Structure formats: C-alpha cells, structure tokens
Length: 243
Ligand SMILES: O=C(O)CCC(=O)C(=O)O
Image (cartoon, protein in one colour):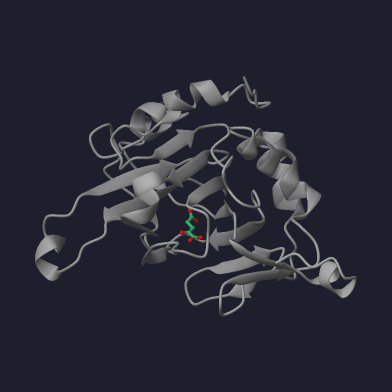
C-alpha cells in the first residue's frame, strides 16, 4: 500500500470519490498542511505573473507552445515537486501517464474573478490534480452538449474547493464535462443538496455557520498535469534527444 504523508493511501482513495459528480472526481481535504501551504505561497515567483483581464497566471516550468508542446530545459522546481507532486503521484492515478506530472499552471483569483467554462483537452494526459491555496472557491462542472436543445437538460455540479485541498479530475469528468469559476465575490446557497463534495469537505461547519455563504478571498490554484508533447531543450543540445 502506498501511503502519502497525509495518511491518504491509494486503497482508500475510493473513500474520496465524489459520488454526486461525474465519474471520476476525487476530493481530499487537508492534502497539504498549513505550513506546506505557506511555504509554497512564499516560493511562487513574483516576476512571472501574466495578467489576464479576469485573473493572473503563470506556468512552470514553461508555457506550452501554440502546438501544445512543453519545451523546457528543467523540470518542475523542488518547491512544487516536494511535497505536492510526490504526494499526488503516490496516489497511483497517474501510473499510466507517459511522463508523470511535468507541468503546473498557477492561477490567482481575487474576489469577483473566475474562469470561463472550458475543457482541458487533448494536450494533456486525462488526469488533472488541483491543489488550492488561500481562499475557498466553487468550481462549476457542467456536461458538454452537442446542441442548444441539450443545454436545457444538461447536468451541472458544484464542487467546493477548500484551501489545502486536492481535487482530481479524470475519466468521463475529464472528457465529457466543462469546468469554470463564476466571477462573484461570494458563493451562496452552499449545503448538502447543492455541493457535490459536501460530505467530503474538511470544514462543513463554517459554511453552515455562515448560512451557506463563502465570502471569496484571494485564492491560488496549482493545476498539475502531464503534458503529452514534451521537448527537453538542454538534452537535445547535448545529443540526448527526448521528445
Ligand atoms: O483554478 C482552478 O481550480 C481551475 C483552473 C483551470 O480550470 C485550468 O487551469 O484549466
């Protein structure tokens, strides 16, 4: 049995499956400790942010090219590799990924900021692991549709992502849904009937105590993936081609 430092083992991952969401999504609260969260936040480079109109982001070790190739001379920095990547890979869900986790997209959302519904697509191995830092936020997941008529009937789910949690999206949740974050300052109507991962949350009490409201504060997400097309620049120069 593989045991991550937090005590989550591969065989017990089933206990973290979000039952009321499309197969297969997993939610693990307190995946990293408060000290590890503070450490990672202190290491995020201040000079690499790319500002978009509704959030800012940075990609490590590099942004993908227009044809979705990761061209990098080095892997992920050690402050991401340990403990986050090491612990995610110990869960076993990336066992068939060609490279393992080789990319991290860091998104920062201020209150009122979000991201349009989208899918992650074919550039990546279909397993995405998101570690949340800072504030809580609701991720909206909705079935993909083929036409306007289907839109009225499509299923939608709300996943509350707490700070220090891990959300894993794979299977049909990866291929058949879109995900996005609403541009609101507060998530409302949060309870066991509206939040798909309610029973898996680390702190349901504080949401209940605030009458089902989550006032947004700055949230940073680390989205870890395996980019399928990888080109190691340094290795090529020295004749050890690996693409
Ligand atoms: O911040 C998040 O949780 C979602 C990020 C996301 O959808 C993406 O990077 O594609």
